[in-house]
Structures are given as C-alpha cells and as structure tokens.
Image (cartoon, rainbow, N blue to C red; front, side):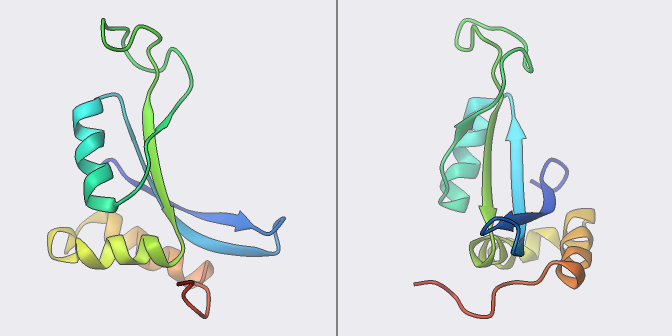
Length: 107
C-alpha cells in the first residue's frame, strides 16, 4: 500500500463538494484480496489490456478499490504505524489542506 496507493480529491454531489479519497489498483488478485479485507472495501475490475494476460485473467484487466471521505481517513488511521514517514502519508496530509473531510460522519 505504501508505494502503490494514490490520493485525490473526489467530486461528489455534482461537483458541489470535494472529499479526499484513497485508491489502489493492481494486477495481482491475491494482493488485492488482502487489501480488500484490510480496508473493508469492494474490488472493481479495471479496463481491458492493462495487465499481462494469464489463464486466470484472459482479458488482462486490472483490479482496483477505493475509499472516500471518512472511511478513507479511517484506513489511514488504522495503518498509520506502518505509514509513518512514507510519501503516501505526506501526500494525504497535503491533500487534507485543499480537500477537507465532511463535517460529520455518516452512520
């Protein structure tokens, strides 16, 4: 997760709000299943031809997962001991300056 994940501002409600988001994409299904379990998220299939074609993945699709807003902050908080000093954590903190979390948590 340290080197592979990306952070960005995601527009919601037709661009009225921007919330911070955390995304990760890979070609390896086993690795992505571990991330899915750790983040408590869903795996999505990416475009065709991005990854090497194999018997398990004949179309060469990538897999990705993402979290937005407070759930993304929860993932960062949960893994903070492993992310200390990483570029990902620095980028997340920079992103929070321009793209704020919602005032309230949805339950």
